[in-house]
Image (cartoon, each protein chain N blue to C red):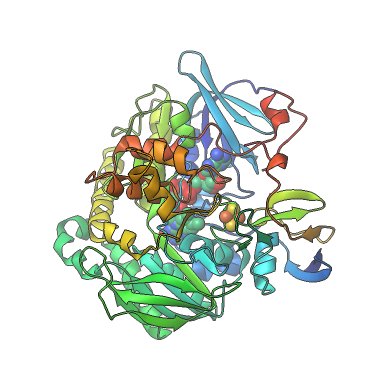
Length: 461
Length: 90
Ligand SMILES: Cc1cc2nc3c(=O)[nH]c(=O)nc-3n(C[C@H](O)[C@H](O)[C@H](O)COP(=O)(O)OP(=O)(O)OC[C@H]3O[C@@H](n4cnc5c(N)ncnc54)[C@H](O)[C@@H]3O)c2cc1C
Ligand code: FES
């Protein structure tokens, strides 16, 4: 049954959504706060139900988190509810649909966050290979180590807290393999200095890694996994500037778990369902286009956090506060706008230092899986272009079935778009290609009963 | 406080608030499903409900994401072969 309309419905109770809800409440609005998770915090402040005392050592900015949780005390919470569709307009009001409820609101703040971006490598589907965020989620959310001897790889500053957390809880981290050369930061001091706290955080992790004797290797990547029923070792290799393997540099590293991440992919199903304008960000991700007040191209719809550009939790909080303030038509303080600008510049520098180069495609054999759900190989994706004539990612997906399985292309969409662009000779992946692998009819699989309007029949969450 | 659920005839210990998938990983169980085409083993990959690698049968309901479902001492958890596409409307 639909609720009577809230002034603002906020989807997502991570750093961005919490800040948005708190700001809207402070502006006197009636606010609904909706999240699939059972407690607030999103990915950054992930913890088990209850307080985060037990994992406090793995967290940052807990003071800010507690203040935000106190700030959203006046919101009506819809937790443990996955939103599968949003619809409506500023004129007619919006409807947020979960398996259990329909939340009505005059304006919307969408803060759905992101998930780990992946590129495939040989045998990456072996159990024991995890996304970097997945390893972090098991640790922060469950206090479980993914393995005893772990290799961490990919690119981006996020690899550091993952490795440091694993080491702090007793895993032997066999090495961090960063495909880029973080020394590149030196070129971006103008962007970095105004938010130097972010860098100090990085230095803290570097010290933690040194303390635990975790070797850090730049310009190296995990290019293959090995094992029968689960991962037993990986091949790491030195990369050239284009990320092709430097011949003869391959080395086998034994491990019982691997955590890999190549930046993040924003979750755009809900914003796309409302038809908001998008753009391709500096990191190659499709993101929602917003103005200085976090307004999208659709009146009444605001987006904050990773969904409008991956930039980390402090930026998500700043954007959330702006969105929540703007959603109640209050003036956005200049200090907030300045903070957002500084953190956005920092994010741009981060993306410039941690790009994903096309050379990863040369690590794959024809038989390397790209789509883990439908078990579609790199050879089959390339054949969709070379033999069947696909020239865009959506057609390649339809012909090869890459991205047509359970996860609806969330895991392989980026790789499929890149492989299609390369095979068809385009220099870059277009927004249209990314949109072709990001649009999904519904944001989460639910039962046919719910689709048919039978609200008593709740689906799989 | 520690409790346990049943998984393929054995006990898997968990602590309050852990998911089924996390408890399995902690117990050293790394896969509990095989794929349809190649029969490849699968367990947790993304850990946050995105990838659907971790599908498992809980109390006779197949295709539940082990990384999201809270562990419960009353549950009977079973590994899965292939996938039960018909059970999930996507
Ligand atoms: C697995 C993972 C772990 C991470 N861990 C860290 C870390 O330890 N340190 C760090 O600095 N950064 C981490 N990050 C990066 C993280 O994206 C940001 O730092 C930060 O959490 C972004 O804040 P946000 O509010 O934009 O999104 P998030 O924190 O991702 O919050 C989004 C929220 O929206 C909810 N949501 C999304 N879609 C729906 C829907 N359809 N229905 C209902 N609810 C929905 C989610 O459940 C989530 O709680 C992690 C990212 C991932 C993917
Ligand atoms: S591990 Fe990806 S959905 Fe559970």
